[in-house]
Image (cartoon, rainbow, N blue to C red; front, side, top):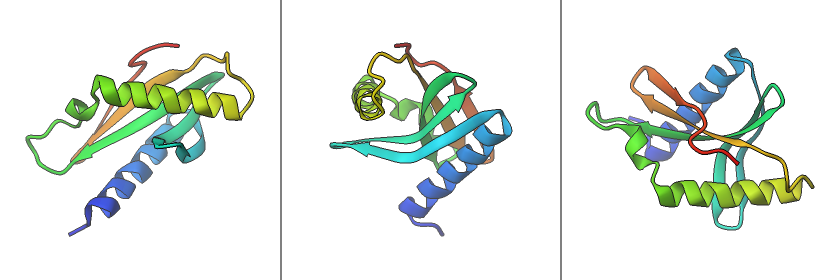
Length: 114
């Protein structure tokens, strides 16, 4: 049985493979700024996309329920730190969620726009 850490990393690898197969170019994994972290930073064409990966083992659990308003605000703050780091504070971006549940991946695009 995988540890929770191993399970999460395996889910992230599955999502990176999925995104790559679907035209995304992954540019960073587990970007950290302060206390915040973004699982995947990618481009879809010219669009900058921050991707949160949520995975659950239990068959009745829905990974999407872990994406709270507080989590979205923390990701937005970390995304702005990323933009400041690359010197492009005014750039727009998109936040996507990919839920990993058993063999299924559910890609939720543009949870909010900036």
